[in-house]
Image 1: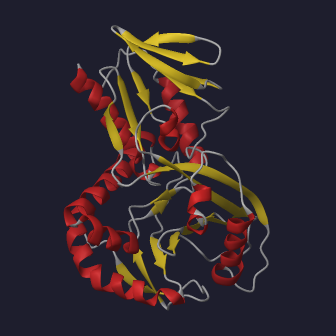
Image 2: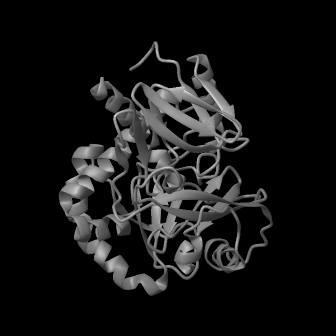
Image 3: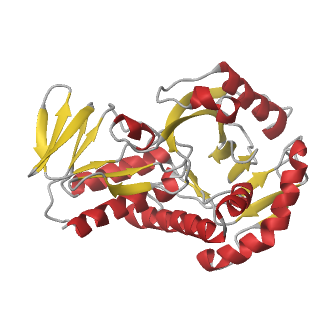
Length: 339
């Protein structure tokens, strides 16, 4: 949109941080239980708008980077229900026809269907509710390709640059860093879960803890999976299994911008791995990490003017892979409108 602009990206970390390189690599649009809940809370128009925004965001990301470059794979997604979640499963079954009817125009066909428990999970109901439209990406490959594209376009990226604050002047915005300051024509704040450090917007940080196994010979699990209302999620990464979530065990403690792991959540992840997902199988863990998402009272991202020359794109609600590209496009459009 702005081919002659001089653009500088300031990154606080030595590498892109937050959830940019730490997310679970899910290309998803909302599990059936999430959409069932949203239907009762926000109504049908809001549900269609949310899913459409996510769907278009993934399409934009694929168009921008190319599916091969980020190892995009579409093996489908499945919501798995624990045995104690019988009532939630039945509510989802009740809402299934209506949700399919609402979302068929978005996807071109009904997005959800019943499937049998074909992966051998234990302690779960005998049926999943699955979608053929969900996929997965290699987060590192995505970021590598994105940075290569940015450099090709002549955009500079500086690392280890923490923005301490900014002040708008009549002809620009003065940006203060730890060791210097400079003036720019326009400033875009795209720090998602860290948004409250630079803006007054209502964005709550939400830490997500993740682990990944060593390669598992003969791993038969393929696709992306949601469990316990989406608070847990797992997928295959080749012959490894990636598993994350559990912040519902300690919402207050996980509402933080500090990276880190806790025994409470890691122990629960290990229980699910050994007792539910891969029962009676010895599995070794390779790595564990955490990322910071941006949440809030609404699932709609904040894309707005903060002033004449300052804009923000925040609160991606754990759907950064799906809507991050779309939010970036909308930010660029705000500048168009500003001109």
